[in-house]
Image 1 (cartoon, rainbow over the protein chains, first blue to last red):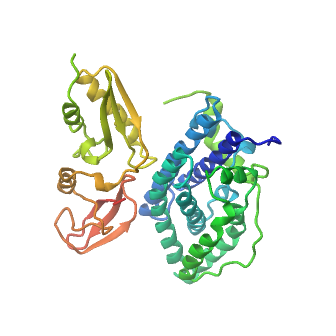
Image 2: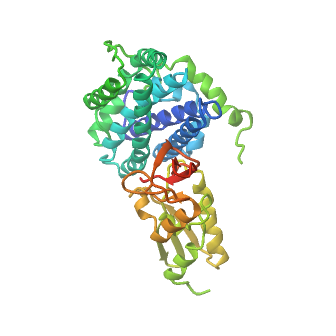
Image 3: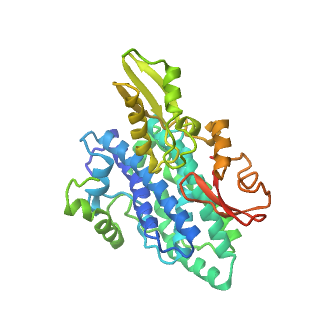
Length: 257
Length: 153
């Protein structure tokens, strides 16, 4: 990133972060389509993925507009490489089993719902409008992922053990949500977005409540894997997602329906 | 041609069916937010139901086709995200048609009032999601039939 970050560059980066989170997680969740444990879950996951891809179109569409180089949401989704993606490491983690997928979804939904709630008060009306739309959908996602985490955690011995394993595995990816950098500082200054750290208390309270219902033990560690939202250090998994997601546009540039 | 009145345009739009639930119209669905003449261009403001609803582009195409068929030459479709679409905007006529079609209309209480098939009230939720983004999946314990419930948002 350049030494001098102007507000427009920061806004572009910030929008990529929002759009890449929903794009990558939407793609991940859609991998369950046709493979879920039961039909109802299959439909629910596909619908959740669809909401997130729809939100991606708004965020990346606006990102392209802000950038001002004529790139569309599709261009940004299909023609950037790993190092240009700005999603949290959490959302690119593999699906694992169904419980792990739902744990990842819950840990993300909880943050996403709080973030969108704050963004509804953004000084940028375009961002406030998208947040208003998305927050309704995400409230619904959160209701379902929280219920599922509670149900499986407080379920059988086996489901409980699997959910605890999933929580222990994914917990180190939570910290990145609350770490701010110069992009965030610029957004705070402009009244566009909240300081990421300011979401932590509300997040801990919400997640703590659900994990208690789920009879799961919140890991002690505050260790955090970082490098997704800055693009500095994505995990190996993102590249694999992109080879699948982008191959058609790479193999047949400009192909349309 | 002379400019059709706005009332006339609303009537035409009320004859355009929702592509996924064809018993109700786009006007019944509450997604047409505004119709207005800007000089000789007809501006129709549409709001999406769900961000990722795949019907959105078809809906725009259907609006355009219907209005062109009625002779509207200059047409502009605007997307409006805020205020976000709510099921409160479904018309009463639309709610009745939904129920008759077998889809329980949205209720502020968050679940269907009765089974759209037999009228039973002993109901259970099968899944928070259904056959389209706007619906959830429920079952009636009286007639044992599953049915769609139009989610309240």
